[in-house]
Image (cartoon, rainbow, N blue to C red; front, side):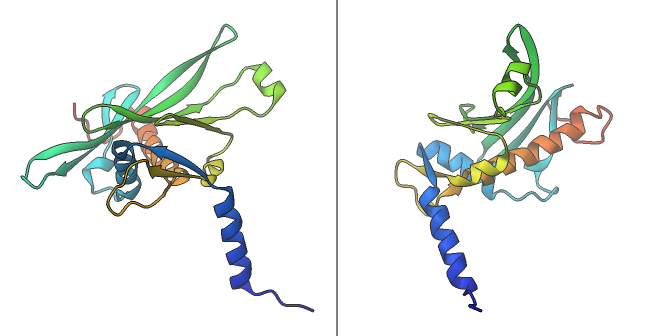
Length: 194
């Protein structure tokens, strides 16, 4: 009976994953926003984790940063709202999560489809998720498919490291799930700032 070396097997798995990785190159500005979102703590005490109800079905999350001059500016904003998708004379439901930089420029969005047409379901299993980031759109049937993508900056960024697209999508799903608690229960006790 031969015994396998667990370290060797793990090393082979890591090499297989690395060889299958797809790189999404984005501008420095987009990379910095994505990395800030991924690296931000999910502890409920932090202001950026507190939902702000904009309307009955629109929620946003905002993170601020302090500049060296002690001026506080917006680092990023995430807005979650319903989406109507037109297909074959039908209006299907979904959600869009839009990510903005501190200046209000959209840098990414995640579309989550709730409904599909019969034709879409008959042909194949349709993509439930679609991430648009920079000039790239990546569709997926499940969030796990994003594990094969990494986000890198086009230009040099100090201390830059590849950011997993799955980590970014998972963080957006964290905010999505927090927003559902506010929109599904209008009387929920949450921070309501405008």
